[in-house]
Length: 391
Image (cartoon, rainbow, N blue to C red):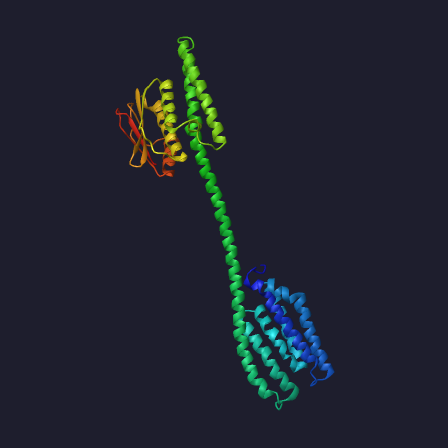
């Protein structure tokens, strides 16, 4: 686990400034202390020098980035030994506690940290007793100061431990949030891909698939009419050619992500009229087309829904209804535009299960623009489709 890049990491320099100031101050006090021998001064200075070397070489890295309990225990042991050596050599070295106690809490949990810092602080009066006995004149001052330092170190250690724990918890939370954001991004991409795949499936079904069906039907008619009715064959051949060109235009528009070519070439009413006329030409049905004089303006997405609905309804009439006449009507009704396609064919039950993508795709399109779709009819009574979208 690497050190979290958070408040603790960014403010680590404050601790290092405190470490440097406390070390330099302690080293100078020991150097100018005349109450001890030169040999004792050298021992204390050597212990302090070893402390700073150990910190620079390994302690700093362990505090910031190493969660290995053994490494932390070893660093704590080295710290305690060096501090104890310096303090027993020269009691003035006790000022090193200003850096040693915070380091203990950085290396250990709160409970062992409290025990170890208390032991380190008690080393100062113990050192005074060892060096000057119980009659040492500094004891009356050291003992109350030791008690105050123990309380202060416990409170400071608790604060330090809480800051480190909060920083670690915050770092883990940030990592979890980043993972969650990555997962949300992945799911969003997958959802977008699925939605685009469904949209393309609807487009292909409503345009290219219907056009190819018409071409196949016309080709079959031409094959049967070549010898018996050449005029009808030529007429159907012209229709097949026109349908193929329209399919090609739809494919190009789809690739370019444009509106349907029928809408690009004219208005919605013109596009629906052409779809109705195509059905009359291909299937020989009587097709009546009615449009209100004043249709409200519609967004392109809404016009696409109405056009695809009309194309799908007329394709179903040609394939399934067995009808003789069809009524197609576009009208404005209470702030909405309604498409109605009614035939006099065999009818069907709306509750009966349906196969294929057409009706399901039509419902999905209508729902996306906040509209509604309804079917009515029965055996022998024809079928009526009603599609209404908000203007």
